[in-house]
Length: 313
Length: 295
Image (cartoon, rainbow over all chains, first blue to last red; front, side):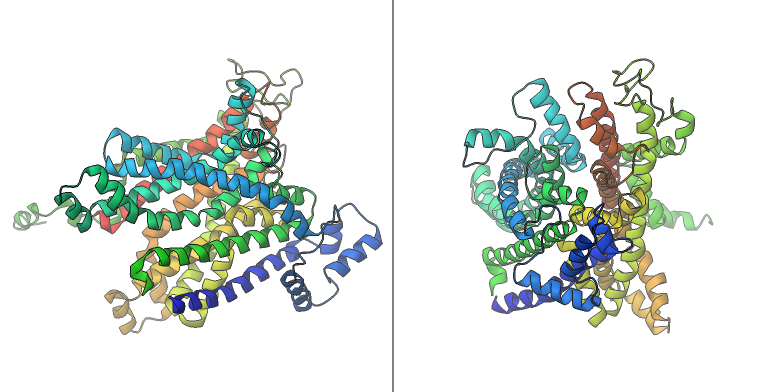
């Protein structure tokens, strides 16, 4: 176990190094002089000189990279060129909003994806199985920004049940907060529910054919006990860890969902930064996203080993 | 074939008589979902190619007297906020989506497959280097990386395709590497090596053809993701630029007029959904048809 952990952590070092190179390189994709492009319509030489100084653009590229990494390691992700606020502070402000949305989305995905996957596997070949598979196909094929627009049309414009946009913090008014986030959370959770359903179905089908399930049935246990106590527990272990890896889908989805529902979270931050040509914020958001993703991957790996006794030795 | 050979072959299963490509095609055609997917994709391809002949109106022609008109006999899908015919824009929009899907996956295949072959076949330091770079790219969620790349490259359909292609590349690096590693220990690869074939020849002519089925399945599913990504980038203003039609940018415009003109959002979204659903159906069908475990 410790050996595995050590190897896994060692592997992270080169990955993190390449992530940093990738994100640093983004600013060098800018066509022409990066300082001029970053300044946008601002032609004040003092502003351009400040950008050059902030990014050390007059220094050789390895020096620029070293200084950027040094800043990142000490928690300095730069400053927003538009609103003159440290990027890290902006991210800290927006992250809890996306965290609430993501948590609700995961809950929705688990509540829909796992039961439908189990039913689909247990009732393989029946109308239930067809319906669950159709749902999964619908979930992975529907662009979430279109689903969001259609839900706004139905529940906000036609029925008037839910607010079309905006965000109320949970601490301010929990009812209003849930009302403002339930639609975007459903949109986000829908695609992940479909993926979870497919994983659960295939894991359950595999487990249901195993010897210990056959033994449990031979012992005379009820089908309910066989499925809930024996099959499900083993089938869900890989599903939960695979589900953790869907965080990328969640964060990608949050970008568009937050834009459509005007939720002031992490996703909207990157889109606004793109429109404002606030490249430091774009880099900061990508870096934080990648770090969260890598950390959760690691936690998922460790959790998988912890819950699987055969891998612990 | 001689008459004497017939009795011997009469007991042979059809699977053993036909080639792998034919067998896969037969299996694919036996799946109703995959066949329906193929038909819908073919219809969209024809629609995109024949757009100038089948579109009833000029997709960029505006008319102030036709602003946001509901669907009618003259304008089947209605008109948009600038009086443009939505049906014509959906038809022309298929071009941007399908081209973006095909080209960005082409870019990902063009970079990812050679790198994956190199990593899987050579192993050692080169493998570790390529794999860690792929891991680093996979650590950045697909759409976020594509948005960041498109933002830095500048908004245009071409740059969106490059951004989506680069973001899709690590998937093909990983897949090709994994497949190469499992195929390179097969006897026929050993035999090719023993015959003195150079490494590049073994990789290109002995390994690549055998990992094609897995690549084909992934490519089909990746085109579906790329079409959604192109629509997403165009929706955000980072893809196809106005007034050229694109399903994503049509949805962006539609969002502002949901109360008065919901049809503006319905049709482009439905078009994306249908194409992506069809590609997913074909991808799933291909996986079942090409997976040796299904035999």
